[in-house]
Amino acid sequence: MAPLDPHSYADGESPLTTHVALTLYLDFATCSLHGSALLTLSAPHSGPLSLDTRSLTIHSAIDPTSLSPIPFSLSAPDPVLGSRLSLSLPSETPLSSILLSFSTSSSSALHFLSPSQAASPFPYAYTQCQSIHARSLFPCHDTPAARIRFSALLNIPSSLSAVMAARHHARRDPIPSEGGLSLPDSLWCAPGRIVEQFFMEQPIPPYLFAFAVGHIVFRDIGPRTRVYAGPDVVGEAAREFAGTEEMIRAGEKLFGPYDWERFDLLVLPMSFPYGGMENPRMVFLTPTVIKGDAAGAQVVAHELAHSWTGNLITNKTNEDFWLNEGFTTYAERRIVEVVQGEERAALNMGIGWRGLNRTVERFRDNMEFTKLKPCMQGVDPDDVYSEIPYEKGFQFLWLIERQVGRPVFDEFTKKYISTFKFQSIDTETFIDFLKANVPGIENQIDLRLWVEGTGIPPDAMEPVSAVYNKIKTLASEFKNGQMPGEDEVAQWNGQEWELYLENLSANVDPSQALALDARYRLSESRDWEVKVAFLELAISTGCKEYYAEAERSLKQVGRMKYLRPLYTALAKCSEEGKMLACRIYAESRNCYHPIAQGVVESILSKHA
Image 1 (tube, rainbow, N blue to C red):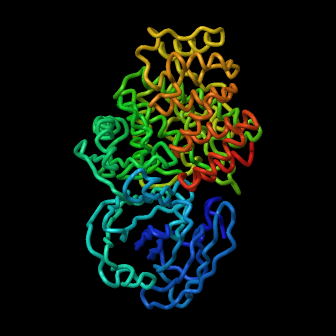
Image 2: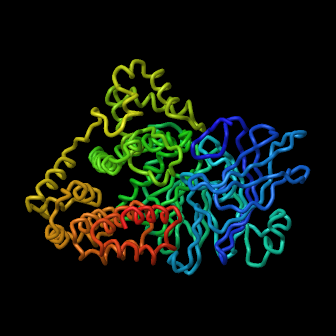
Image 3: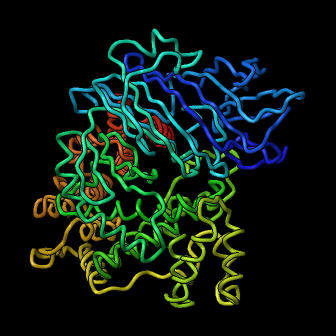
């Protein structure tokens, strides 16, 4: 069988799933999920068929027409891929669909929160399927090469509500027999249960499957946007993201029609492991992006840009991840430039440039993962997740823009999106399309070096702007004891401070860090980017005075962008720091999403 994706058991000789009808029962008392999945294939099939699973118990597999059982087996779990579900479809009558029943109490995609963990009188549950975690929710071809439409019935406690990255159809009482063979009516139709029904008509890769359940309310902020959040957060979130419609319109002018109808936003509890997740029709966001000054709109701009680059056109495998994130980082900065101005976009680029250099240094012992298209056979995408696909991908596209001119590149981008929308492609397809539509580009840019080479190519470019250069100058003066004056930082917001801190020398003296914080209270900043950048710097210099603040932060937030640097700084700084990091994690583990748990455990096993 020909491999289709290094991170999936799907093979290139069998039909892929095109539609999934899901029936899901969430049991908050046991933190478990019970369900059935009716999988429709792209063509009738007989013989072996492989699906991806992780930590799923498979109760039955049947022919939905005849109700005849389908023989199946589960392989021993692979640490990256999970378990292969092998089905033997009848040879005499090829099947176009398969009905599977299953359950799990240890899904790597699903996080159940108690009321105290959710900071609410009610429990909460949410999913995060990127990169290869949809297989822990239901059996599927868990590869972005397999685009699916779906319907879903979520059976939940009637005191809660559900949202989904899909069109909401109804909230209604459970109907007898709709739970299927694995969910008897005594369970499905029990008192105090309600069903939320959803449909997704546009084909998406499985990693974009997403739902959340909790005490969730909403505010309309535009003709196609609502903000969903807990009652204590929704007002502040609505103010932070009030400019969303302006960004959508800017995106449409740059990249073509918005093809997803709605662009709603869900602000999740603090444990959400990412800044944002671009789930179509409903972006998931961490509350840490709410900063009170609309600066959080930059994260929204990134997730919005995914509506064209990532959701409409998707990387075929995780080895092509830069096609999602590099293009989206480029598109985000174009939207920011329109809405917030060139200087703000340049600051964004400057932070990215610094992050790219730091990430290349992080992978100095394994430069394979500084390639735009790395070899990821046997590698968990979560273990090597980094800024490389974002920032090196951005640099590649920005170089092409500079080489051919913005008008030509804009025309190319619109044609690229319209040509491949609702498809999943690989890097080679992009390069072929680029050469066909920008004749001679391969003679102007070393395309192979950019795609296959390690590190930062010599024709990458640090951004240039007056504000960016001024901040870099002030940072370089700090090592000589010169702190920025209050008049120089009076107009700074979080992004300026973040860039300043990113550019400080690694050899900052502890007394300098203490003096900087005494004047500007960076460790107390409401902006998490600033707070964490400062705490990382201070702890790395040996300032034990900030251990307590680091502990408070790590027990409050679950975003991996903050967990990584703080746990790493603690684990590397001293034996006392290592012991503290291990204790904090032991006390906080259950508050983190399973994906974040794996990341922190990897850090501690390496350093502590």
